[in-house]
Image 1 (cartoon, rainbow, N blue to C red):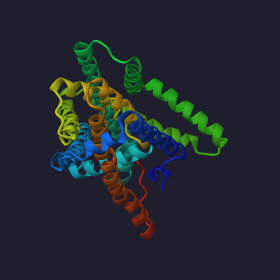
Image 2 (image 1 turned 120 degrees about the vertical axis):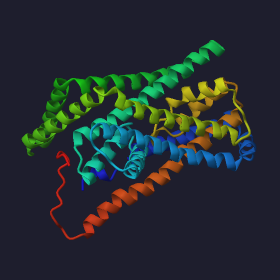
Image 3 (image 1 turned 180 degrees about the vertical axis):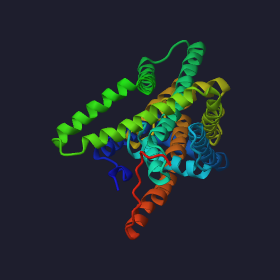
Image 4 (image 1 turned 60 degrees about the vertical axis):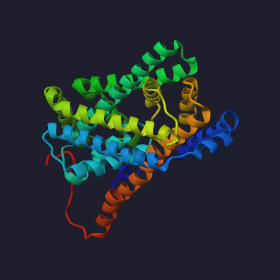
Length: 359
């Protein structure tokens, strides 16, 4: 099995995570106060908080429906439960391997490996899904900034710079995806550069011609997949509805983490706080700690008590990161590592899966 199917937490990611957590603990101690945090946490309403966990699963379910709908538009039908389990697999990989697209690409790879679907079109479906998510996050951010300026007239320059910086990265990613998906010549040049790099690293000791042939077919299917999706705008209506429902579920989790502490936010503050922090909800342990500090500063600027803000952030992080980490690891162990173990223990037969072939 490829090492791709066994992602590992790198030492660098682990070190950055530890530094972030230490920074957050120091921030909690010096700027919030441990007694304030504890007294706020003691008010926790378990009923509201338990609903947050349910909605986390609901959000994943809606994202699975988005991906399944996009695959259906490409004439590939998979079961809802398959899309649901594979979505959890992608979440696990995203959590331990930073990059934003790592989980999506891995679940595409694993679907190809186990369901024998066309690689290019499957990758096109997960990239299209990512485009929809980025567009929702950018809409959130624009809405938040507009509401903030209309309500307060100013925004701390450091926080504004961080939000704009992350937004620019998302915009750059969006533009790059659109450019590569619509420009076959650009992807062909990129493929040539990759092959030259591998030739240099491996000193031409590999089948570059076979690799090029397979990748050219995959790229052709990838571009064909995007052309198919763009030529059927009505087919994108259902995925967009599901993305919005997933967004609504995530916002409900955000609100419930405040309600569980007995704190009510005005509607405009909910929209501002969630919209501005949506850009910071980046998967991956490498952003632990720093993420919480920035979001806490935003909440304080909105007039939310520091104890309430930090506690709600930690409750939200536990539900949207650690809970999903545990569940996704269970699914990954079951569907990926379990499959690998079963394959190793089964007598060898000819089950070669060429992911570039169409089922």
